[in-house]
Length: 305
Ligand SMILES: Nc1ncnc2c1ncn2[C@@H]1O[C@H](COP(=O)(O)OP(=O)(O)OP(=O)(O)O)[C@@H](O)[C@H]1O
Ligand SMILES: [Mg+2]
Image (cartoon, rainbow, N blue to C red; front, side, top):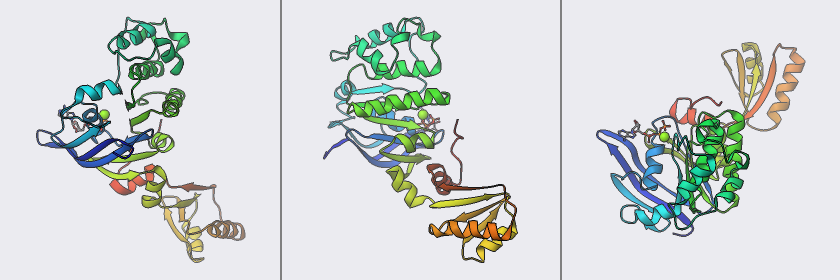
């Protein structure tokens, strides 16, 4: 397996006539954060739940930690941790009782106290699950996913619906899992999250991986490089910059200039200064995974929270 903790070959999953996963091939390296980024219905949960042995593939070979999902699900289940999408647990058990309850199912387990420390829930250990905020509930879910000291942890949209602060707290826990040497498989709608946290990622759309690499390599391959936006620029500004050899276009009320090299920025400012042309502000931005998604599919992923 050469360091690969998961290997997936030609995975197909059909639900009746629908091909929810359409021939994906990928691997996950030991100790990495690997994300599957995609819109609703892309096939993310189907893919991860097949690796978790919760759904059966229609065809393909899936090997997790050296075991075949078709024949050795019991071995795999002992060694993985799962935070399902829309996780929920017992409302009328406290945080500590919920963790104890799931811990009792495994021979090999991490003590509850250590898990409370890991997800920073010490102060809430005696609170009923139903009385926790969304972000704290997700942290209980991560603690439960860690209870059997798994080698691989699957987190299916752990931050969907959380406010920005709670999302960042979940990000810290994911970083901590990586520091502990765990392999993390994350699914998300949020490009920013995938870009910041992942060592490698796949962009999934309509059952297919349309990009698969490190965030940097994906952006380099499919992005537009660096873009300078002159807000409230005019056609005259666009034409003036084009005359200087720049690659510019008027888009709605903004002038977009795709930078070919760093000197382009100096030309832009010199021209704006000398012409006295009106503009509101100038933004310089690198292309992001959102731009890549838009370019590859013609659609936007969900807006960032
Ligand atoms: N058990 C099922 N039976 C029939 N169709 C299903 C089933 N599970 C998923 N699907 C369909 O398969 C497609 C992929 O669903 P899946 O849940 O894997 O996507 P997802 O990327 O996780 O979406 P989301 O971001 O909304 O969670 C969708 O069209 C979905 O409606
Ligand atoms: Mg899903």
